Structure formats: structure tokens, C-alpha cells
Image (tube, helix red, strand yellow):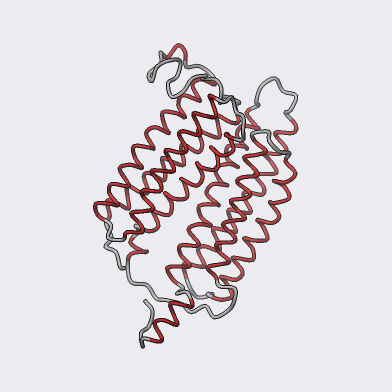
Length: 307
């Protein structure tokens, strides 16, 4: 079903994505500063939703700021879901909006349980991964509501197995596994070895995905941009990952988290989220520009050209 482009909805989606990116930075700061338990109660902070400033110092300030940003993001996501319900004609896009609301609720509950259960039961890892999934849903909404996505676009045949859709989905899966392993290491549930080993898998996956896009759709501008973004992000992420690991291992004996470790870890975490979101956006682009084989067969049987 073709959709109408609504500039206001798309711009608000972009604004919400930007807010979520800031929240990702805040969450990484909480983890890197070991500030997750600086405020020991939830959903209040020191027994109040608006605690006195004298209590908000050091890690408590970082943690409370993270909570405030998250609460506001929840309001933005509810507003975005309403805008999709009100203006977007596509039922499946509305459902993505509802799923994002559900995701941010789960994210908030997991964050609260992380505090109340004192970082046990892999709750911090689930909290971190859910946050990145919500971020990807928001990026997806921004793509789906864009002028580019809603206009008439040329369609390109993909005759070679496996399909570019399957390849892009597999790539997004490998990147998400790297997110999961990274969260496990940052929260001290696993060693850095699985995360480092899977980095090579992600690198190969991104290179193969980009290479297939180039061979099959060399003249398609959208795929060319995706290739550049994927290459730039995975290259930057590997360098940042090495720097983050080096800074963490060399400051293990420090009495408190050191600025160099905090800086590299935060940047590495956020760029990882952007790489995951870009991989998911690549899946959406594939489905928008390349009809699946069954769609081609159905259109051919009806004497139509798939649009």
C-alpha cells in the first residue's frame, strides 16, 4: 500500500531518534562510571521524582539524568505512535509504533529491575539490548515515514540466491549478537574473548553484504550509500573497540573508572548501536527496492510489473 508523506511525522520521528541517541550516551555513561546503583530506589530517586540537587552528585547525577531522559523519551514515543495511528495509512507501520511503545515500557521495567535486583540475573544485559532494539525501531520508523520511502521508486531484480533480503537480515543478526556479547562483557557476565572473536564475524558479514550489494546493484545509488555507511561504521567500530578494550584493561587497577576508558567505551557503544540501526535500515531498503521472488512470480502471473 502506498503511503502519503507527512513531513511533520517524519521530522518528529527524526527528533525522537536523536533523543534516543542522547539516551544511549547517557546509558553508556552510567555503565562506564559504575553508577547503576548510585540511586538505590526505583522508580523514584532518593524517595522522590524530583530529588533535591544536593543529593545529585557524581554517579547519582548521571543515573538520575539517565532516568529523566528515558522518561521523556517514553513520552516522545507515545506521541510518535499516536501520530502514526492518526496520519499513516499503513497498518503495519502503525504496529511498529505500538511495538516501540511496548519496547520502551519493557526497557523501563528492566532498568528498574536492574536496580532493585542489584545488577543480577543478566538484567543489565537485557536492559542494554532492549534499548538498542527500541533505537532500531525508531530508526525504522524514521526511514518508513521519509519522503524517499513513500514515493514511487524503481524496482530491481535479484535473480541470484541467496536473496539480498536474506543476506541483509543475516548481517543485522550478526551485528545484534555483537551488541549482546558487548553488553555481557561490559556488565561483567562474560570475558571479552567472545566479543572480540565475534567482531571478526561481523566484519566479514558486513564486507560480504556490501560486496553482494555492489555486484548485484552497482548502479543503484541507495545501495552505494549503504555500502559506504556500513564500511565506515564497521571500520570505526573495530578501531573504537580495540581502544575501549585497551583502555579498560590498562586501567583495571585504577580506584575508579578513568576518563579515557569512559570516553572510548561510550563512543564504542553508541557507534555500535548506529551500526545495528544501519544494518536494520539496510533490510528495509532491500525490501523497498527489490521485490521478493514470490512477488515477481505473482505479478508475472497477473501480467503486471511489481511496483
